[in-house]
Length: 292
Image 1 (cartoon, one colour):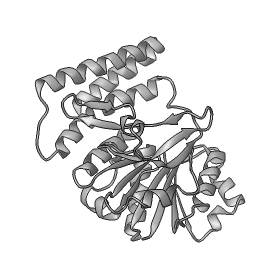
Image 2: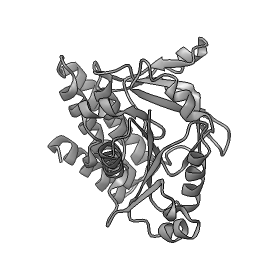
Image 3: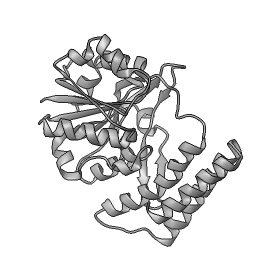
C-alpha cells in the first residue's frame, strides 16, 4: 500500500521543516510528500531550497499565487496525490510533527477503517488533545463525549468527524466523497469531510498514533477567526444534513443551533469588544444565513 503525505503551509517555515523531518523518519516509509504553499511571504520557498528539500525526488512543491486557506490547500494537495495513484493520503498542517511510528500505527487499522485520525500532544505544555466527537444531527452541532472510550482502556473509538491534522484516508473513500470544499477556507472543512466519510466507512480516532502540535490551541477569538467560525457553522450544518442518507433539520434542531451560535457570538464579543468584532460577527451571520 502506497502512502502520500499532503502538507499545507503558510508562513511557518521553521515549523514546516520539523514536519518534513518527521515525515522522513517514519518506520513505514512515506512514498511522496505533496507540499502546498499557500503563498507564504516569510521566505518559505527559499529556506526549503537552501535545505535541499526542493531537490528531493519524493517532494512535490506547489506554491499558490494567493492564500487558499487550509481547505483550499488540502483540496489542491489531495487532488495531486489522488491523481498520482497513491492508496492512502495522509494530511497535516505545518505545525504538527508525527511520531516515528504514527503512520505504522494508523495503517494497522486499515483493515476496517478508511478514515483514521490521530491524537495530538501540545509541545508547549504536554497537554493531550483527546477528542471523541460527533456531529449531532439532533442539535446541528458538535458533541464531545469527553474521552469516555479511552477512559475505559480502549485504543480507538468511532467518530463521525475528521481532522486534517493527521487524517489518513484511503483513495477508495476519496472517490466516493470527493475532495475538501475550498469554500470553507478555515474551520469545519475537515469536520464535514469526516461526516461525509462516516456514511461509507467507520471513521476512527486512535491514541496509538501521536502528532506533536507546536502551536497551542486555536487562539483567542478575533474578528478574522470569528467570522469563519460563525459563517462556517451554517455551512457545516447545511452540508452535513445534505450528506445524510435520511433525516432533515427540524425546528427544534434549528432552535438549538441558533441558540448555541448566539452564545458563541456573545462570548467572542465579550472577549474582544468593539466595532471590528461586531462587523465580523454580523458578516458571519449574514453570509452564513445567505449561504455565501
